[in-house]
Every structure is written in structure tokens, then in C-alpha cells.
Image 1 (cartoon, rainbow, N blue to C red):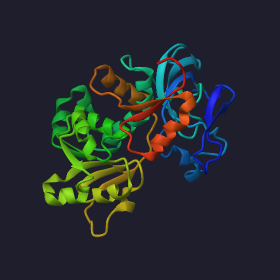
Image 2: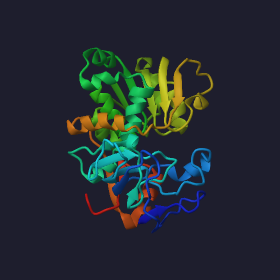
Image 3: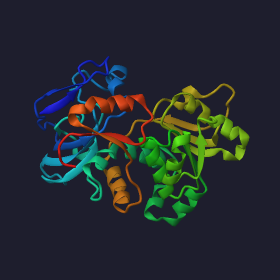
Image 4: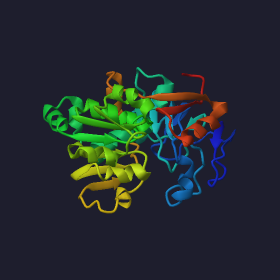
Length: 332
């Protein structure tokens, strides 16, 4: 099969080469023909910075987002040959930047019926990260998504701040917070993306080209929030400490928030760094929302398989609006 490979973990240089079609070896392995995948910013450094997690034995195929068709299933599987599926493949196993991949049954969900393969590939990592940040790691009541009125009333009294709100994760977090009935949804973005972020459901905007988060909240302390979802790290995460309420939650997918606490900020907050859990059951919940036309993936651009390097270069450069998708097969 044709596969994208990262030959050297110290370099972002990728090559397209031939590798053997993977053979199912784990009891949950499902062989899938890949139709599309997406890069994730930072993934080309994972093996370098987390060698205890990304072992040298991993075949270095990037692109852990998968959209494809099932070719074989383990005995007793809930999936069947020919099913259209999608998944986030655990980062310590070969990804979907190849014509065939081996997600595990626990990672898989049936493809949303109203999405193309391109849109489906743009969904798993970003939607799971936002969903789990809000409802698993954060303090937003997930039952509101299915109409629970008590949960809706609780969420209506909460304020959530989302950094890099036009990004792939940020755009999902804005939409999911909106659907959960969160009363205050603050999106941090640039001037050019203000209209886009508002269209997703943000009730307030912080234009980081005009002011940082700490200046924004210093103007009016009533702007403090109950939950911050940090998707960018760096100074933005440090500024976020000024905006969290006493006893609030700061969730980062980039680094440990406590390490970015500014001098002089003594308020108590629950803070954590977390890695996404590739749960197919969470994807099932997201699928229901997609098929009801309540949320949708955002596709920045599409790249052909042979031009794969452009996709990783664009993502690593930052400032994409949504996901960059790599077409692997001709089925779209």
C-alpha cells in the first residue's frame, strides 16, 4: 500500500512510500480502507517528546484521524464488512496516512450519513477533544444535549471561554457549548474571524489583535468565567488565569495550566492538562448531533494524496480555520 512515513522523528520531513498492508493482530483490530485523513498540529514531534508513549516500534505513519470503509472485522464485532466508519486512532499506533489502517473497534463509530468523506475525516480528533473538554473534563452538563431541562438551566448560568476559537477544536467547542445551552460563550479570535466565530454561537468575542484576555477581564471583573478551554498554550494560557472565577476550571490540551500561572494570581481553580480519549461511544453521541444538523465540522482545505506534504506544512504553520484534509482514495 502507499503510505506517508516520517523516517526521522527529529525532522518534519515526510515521504510517500510502499508499506505492507497491515494485518489484524489485536482482538479489536478492524481493517479499514482509508478514504481521507487529517494532520494534527504537533504530531510530528510526539515521538521525540513522548518516547515513553510513542515507542520506537511504532510504524511512523501520521494522520490519526480516519474516515473509511470496513474490510474485515473481529469475530462478534458490532461492525460489518462494508460499513462506513470514522475514528481517532490512538497516537501510539500507526495512523491513517495510508491506503489501509487498523483502528480498534472501541475507537470506531459509524460515519454520519449527512457528511462527505472529507467532512467525516475532519471530525474525530477535533470533535472528541472539544466534547471531552466540555463534558468530561469540564463542568458543563452533557444531559442538556439530549433535552434535559435541569441540565439546560444549569448550563444557562455558566460562562465558558474558548481560546483559538476559529481553530478545528475551538470551532467544535463553540458549537457544542451552544447546543448545551451555555449562557456565556466567549471566543478568543482574530479580527478577520470575528464574524465566523459569532456564527458558530459565540455570545462574546475577545479580539486578541486588540487586547489580551487579562486586559479584557480587567476592564470588567464580571466577565470572569466558570470554564476555560485552552487550545493554544503559551501566553494565552497564562492570561487565562486572570479570567477564571474562584473555583472554576481551566482545561488545556497543550500543557499543564498550573505551570503557566502568573505571579501574583492566587485564586484557586481546578486546572488540568489532558489527552483526548479516542472513544467511539463519544463519537456516536457527536454523530447524533451531526445527523440532526445541530453541529458540523469545519474544513479549511483539501489536499490530494500525492501533495500530502502541503497539508502538514499548512497545519504546522498555524492559523487554519478548521481542518486540512488529505484525500487518500477517490471516494469523496
